[in-house]
Image (cartoon, rainbow, N blue to C red; front, side, top):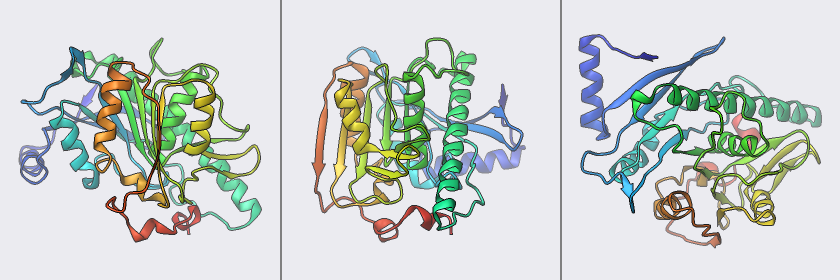
Length: 317
C-alpha cells in the first residue's frame, strides 16, 4: 500500500486548499494499481464528524465514484463533483473517487461505417479496462481493512463513461465474470447517470439478478444512447433497454427518464439527491425492492446548451 506524502510546504498548501476552498473532509490519496501505461490512484473523503453513518441501525455504504469524460478525459475528484461529495459526506457516506485507464484518449472517430465499427470496438476495450480497474480498486480496499472502507459495503456510481463502467461491473458480476474481485463480492448498488452497456455479442443479459440499480437518463441523449446505438449485435444498450430487461427478470431497480433532455443528465448527481437518498436507504440498505419508473418533465432541472444536441462523435473530432 502506498500513500502519497507531499513535501512539507506542498502538503500544507494542499491541506489549506482542501479545507478552505473546498470544504470537504480531509482527502486521503492512495496508489491502488500500477499499469504498463500509468499509475492509478484513489481518493477517500470521510463523512463529516457530526454526520450519522448508520440508518435504522444499518451501516451506510461507501460510494465509489467513476468519473465521466468519454473514456478520453476527466479527473477522479474534479471540482465539478465536489459539491456532491460534500453532500454525501454531510449525510454520513464515505466517498471513494478512483482513476481508470482512458483507452479513448487521443482517438479520432472516422465518420464512416467502417470507422464507426472500429470506434465501437475501441469503446468496448475502454469499457473492459475500466471494469478491470474498478475490480482492482475494490480488491485494494479489501486488502487494506485499516483504511476503514469495507469492501463488502460499496455502492458504485458513475457519470457518462463512468456510468457505462459501473453498469458493466454489475453485469459482469451477474454473468459470473469476477476475476480480480474478492471471492463472493457484489456491489450493494449502482447509481448510473446517463450510462449503458457496450457489447459485441448482442444485448446485455442478466442470468442472475444484479444488485439494486438506479438509472437516470435523458430521453434525447445522443452521446450515450437512451435506447440502442450501433449495429444489431455490436453497440451500446442504454437505460431504456436495460430497464426493460431488468423488469422482465424481476430485478430491484428504478429508472428516472428525464423527458426531452440530452447528455446533461450525466451531471445530475447533485440535482437528483433526494431520489438517490431514497434509493440508498430503501433499495440498498433495507433491501426493499421499491421499483420506480418515472418520466420526469421538470423545467427547473439544470440544462446546458453544450449537451443539448451533442452526439457521440462530437467528443472525438
